Amino acid sequence: MAHLQATPSIPTQKSTLPKEVLERLRSRLLEEKRQLITAIARLGGILAPEVRETYGLDWADQGNFKSDHYTNAAQLHFAEGQLDGINHALVLMDQEQYGICTHCHENINPERLEICPATDHCSKSACTPAPTRYVKSRPDVWH
Image (cartoon, rainbow, N blue to C red; front, top):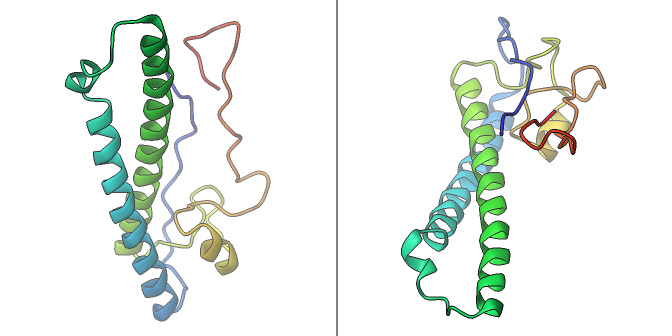
């Protein structure tokens, strides 16, 4: 399944956030990254093929396995997406461009960064990406 997203442009100006704010947010991002890596490793182990063999062969066990498998796969996909966002935010910090919207190139409100430190866009409706939605008529397409 393909995800269709606009490619963000790279801001050219430097971040104006105070150093202490940047360090606090970097610390939070690194802690979240550590937790996500642990969760991803756990979920990857649960989804490993050899774990499948521990389930019985009756219909109820197979149904439970499929339900658990899809739930764990969705959680893994979500955690990997969060980790990508955190890694992107850390790269922007290293490039001194953290806190600048990748769409309109204006400063992101520091309060927004406190709430969602991995964001790379401001809260203006034109800059906030639309949520990904599944197109029922085309199961292979995501918008």
